Length: 140
Image (cartoon, rainbow, N blue to C red; front, side, top):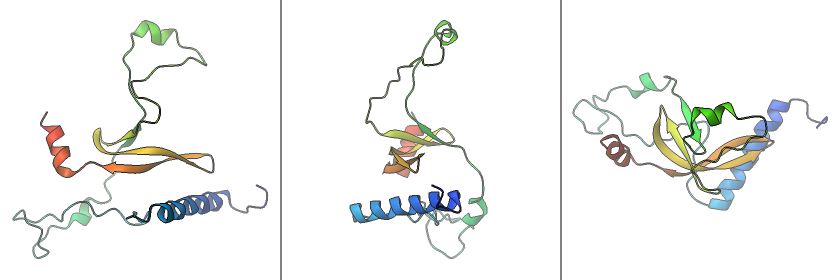
């Protein structure tokens, strides 16, 4: 580790190497980390997706949102919470190896699997929830 001049640069190189490895392994469509995924249609006043008269979606691209990756959930009584100590194990409803949910402001948008690069956790998206599926889930 002492041969690295900048630890942050080394971590970036590791992530870049991991992404390149994933791209080579998949041979499928990958998302450029520097550009947001173009999964949303451009908004227009008439509801279509024509460029003329399109509202400028760039206005909302810098709005911060809460991104959460959820391992699982459980419901336990307060008396069990008060008995927790260092080393306690809490059983979750998710099974080992199951995809984890990725939520934006509490709304499920994707599922993925955990990856570890240079001792840091990340998530590789394996399934994106379609806009129609998101709308269907909102109406339940």
